[in-house]
Length: 421
Image 1 (cartoon, rainbow, N blue to C red):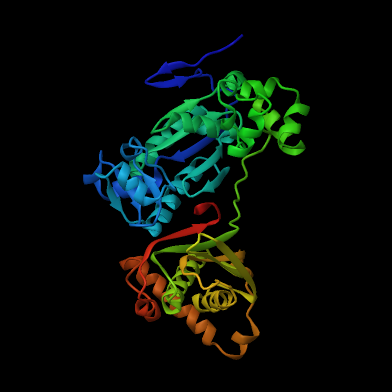
Image 2: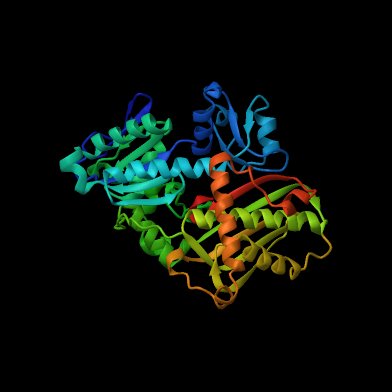
């Protein structure tokens, strides 16, 4: 029997039966912007954009700004034209990481089965928490209330029998809502959606499916799997066909391994000044090392990203002799990589530093250099002391003199950590 959603409170409802729906997807609403509003309550109800000025991009926007067409990753110049009355707030990634950690701690109070997939979202398997905390819906409602009460931040939650459907449900619940997709309603729910709602269907895949007349999830599900495979490839076709029928056996995996940590800067004006570029390279190395230490990680590989004035992007990487969390070591490797990058005489628009090949700091071995000369250990201790000062007085409380001597002004510096970008 066909089932259609019922509108309740302005949102579709597929029913309230959450039996067998032990997967929750918690997604913070306009996370960076919400953190800023919590710190600046006078901006509540206003259009707020988080990002740098000039040639930076939008990192987040309140729903009031989104109503004017502003969205994340949009050039700030475009966002300003669309919503000239918006208040632009510079990003504070340390505050966002702290808020994320606080939210994830609350989620782990409910169950140990929490899979954090980015700075602002996570899956939970609450099957083992039902006896203590109630039904999945009750758990979701209590979580939303507690996150709001203890952090001041809104979140939306999807409740379903699989991770994929729970994530879709949280999206339909936004902003600040809850949507349950009963197990029996999984297929009708999916078949009400356009094909691009499926994981893995981007613009090119959507166009490839459209050439075969497949525009909706229902059409994809009813198509012969061989046809879907011809359209998008064997592995992808089989996977999408399974998703269209609600088949997603992936469990919630508590441990999320960060693959890389880094930061990048877009200059206000394209520059050929090597001193300016290297000053920002040092600042990025410093930020990257600080993020490594905050997470108890060390890096074996350093990479850089350079974007020139013609929008060409180049990446270079180097493996270190030993893992490190020291800014100077990261900077030396990054500077050598920059020197070996052929820019073709073009000015630099963007520079980035990334630490890869991560491992726990406890696994780090004392290097021969440190065994003979403790200067590297002294640098690490000095940088740890700087971390403490920044934690107490703000991220700009201590900066390298080399950075301060640089004449270039970056428009935005965005930290990233695996899915934390």
